[in-house]
Structure formats: C-alpha cells, structure tokens
Length: 484
Image 1 (cartoon, rainbow, N blue to C red):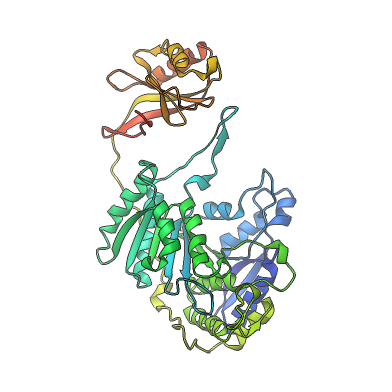
Image 2 (image 1 turned 60 degrees about the vertical axis):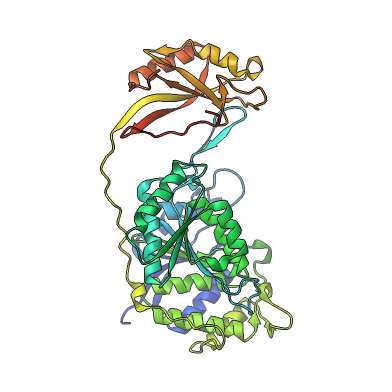
C-alpha cells in the first residue's frame, strides 16, 4: 500500500495500556499500514470533570480518522458519569455491534467445541438510551425506545453480514410475547426484511429460551440479531461458553465511523502485573484491519495467534495443566505471536478473509407511507398514597373529571388493572395509571386533554406524566393492561 491509514487509538485504564502496547506491537510487526493518533479517555478524563469521559479534541480526532481502536476504560462509580461506549456509539451512529464467538478447542477449554456464531446487536436504542425518571416516592421508570428505522438497519446489517461472510442462518431474538409493541416491532421488521434474503435460513427465539440455548447448545446458532440489552447479555454468555470472555473482540460499526475493542473491562486488580490476556483487543484489531481494507494483514495475525495457542503458549487465564507448554505474560504472549507471523495453525482451520468482505455495506432504510394517526385518549399517571391506597377510592374521585366526554375508564398499578373490578390481593404502589377515553373511543383533541388535566389537578391530584393514546390506520397503538 502506498499510504498509511490514520486511526485513533486510546490506551484506556487498568490493563488497557498493557494490552494496547502488545496489540500495536503485533500490528507493526505484521506490516499493518496504519498511523496512530493517540487520545486520552476514561477515568482521568472523568475526574477532570468531563462527564462523557472524552475531551472535545478526542471527538475531533474520531471525526477525522473515522476509525477507533479502544482499550478498556474505568468509569468512576457514582452518579453523573456517562458510559463512554454508549456516548461514542450514539454520537457517531455506531448502530451495529458485532461480536464473533468461536471455540478454539482443545487449546481453550470449552464444552462446546463446534461453536462458531456471531451476535449482531442493535447499539443505539432500547433501554440503553438511558432515559430514566424518579416519578414518585416509590417508583422510577426507564424508557425503552424502539424505532422501525433503527430495527431495519440492524436487521438488514445482519443479513448483509451473513451474505458477506458465507453464513447460512440468521436468528432473531426478542421478548415480543410480553412487549408486543416494542419487541413486536423488531420481530415484525425482521420478518419483512427476511423476505428479501430467501437464500438465508431464518428463525425466531424468545430471548429467555434463546439465552438458555446459547448456554446449552450454541452450535445450533450461526448469526443472531437482537435488541440492545439482550445482545449485551447474550454476547457475554456466548463468549463464556466458548472458553473465555477475555478472548472476545467486537466491532461497533456505523455508516462512517467504526470502533473496535475487547469486550472485557479494565480489570484494575491485575493492572501493571503483565498478566492480562491481550487476545480480546487483538481480535478487535483483526476486525479493524478487515474493515479498513487490509485483510491480508488480518489473516496473518489471526493465523499466528491460533498457532500460538496450538503451541501451548498461554496467558494465565487460559493456562491448562497438561496442555499448555508455557504460562506467558502479556508482552511475552504478544512476542510469541510476532515470532509466528507467516505461520498457519496445524490443527485448527486457518483464517482466510474474502477480499470482498472489505467492501462497505449499503444499509438502506425502507421509506414507509405515513399511517393515519388519531388521538383517542390519554393515560394520566398520578402519585397517590391516601386512604390505604384503595383503588376504588381513587377511581371514585377521578370519575368526577369529564372533559367533554373524555372520562376515566380504568386504573392500573404496575400494569395490573385495579379499577373497576380489581382484586383486593393485588399489591399497589403509589404510582397509578389512569386511562381516560370517550365511551365510543372517538377522537379527542389536545384541548380536551388540557381541560382534563386541569380538572385532575383541581381534584387535588399530582399528575406526574401523561401518555397520549393513538390509533394508526385504525389499529390500537398502546398496550392493554393485565386483567383488562
């Protein structure tokens, strides 16, 4: 190559500097055509009073290079500190988190030697939006936001990834038997996109049984696509059943910028002891090399890494008596890989990246016709802790509110219907959802809702939030309560 690709590098905290040094030494020895722009992130930046953990100059570096190789960081405990990973993912539109999980048996101990799956996780939405509120003395809420464009982007990415890397099957995982609107939207979008890829097998698993199957029979999966929180959890499950979370690398990919890292944390308890396994960051760097168009170098490093494992040179976390030949420190392990550059594994299948894998994916979002949106009611949430929290007492008071036919229909507590006709055994907090509709569920106006809220306030209630109730093309767009 005639010129080097500039990348942004962060050494991070804890074991970060050690494993980044080891990784960059390997990249240099393998002939990676990169130039590094080093930035400071993490704990020391947080302690300067910068809540994002990254100074403005660091953001400018990423805007220029578009590629970020990041070591683990430490986020100080306590309020006020934002997750740097979440900030970076959302700020730069890194919508796809890609985590390969492969077994390297018998050199890495595992009960599932045939495991070779990839988890593709939506990276920007879901509960990780971090929108939370304390609303009453007893109740907080965390908003789960799922969009159709966000769902389509990650699902389409999963199918395109499967095509590019010769994968045969894509599995969707949700909890849409409970979250019928939010997770239901993701599942519905998956079914729609899947029709465009008839050559790829598809299926769907509810996330709880899906997680159990990853732990019990991971060999049955190929590519898994799922929502943000679920993906975070099952990625660690999958990495652990293949042998060690310490081996896993990941990519966070957007339309312009991409971030590559190890999936483990900063492990401050072993920092500075030359004990850490750099494999996770090495595997993240291998993914980076493919992404920036240097697959030959990526192959060379991946094959040398596997040859090192085969030769029994292992860091302490994966050392096995009777199989390992040497317990190596961080830098010694890196040097062993460097010494084997150009060699191939003898027992494990060698890595060969399809050169077309370096071509960017074109992830389109389908333009949908706008549905007819009609406002038909409102859920008014109130804090109320009087009269023994008797739902009937609350309901009898709120029935006095009437905004031109917009009247109380039911009350729920933690999603369970408690009025009218609730059960006395239902446990109630001080947080009540009060649903107001017209008798025929006709359209209402914002003016009616404002009038209703004035009446609710006039009755002595503290309304803490409202949620408008809509239909789209005549279809109900809000959940029913348990017991309704």
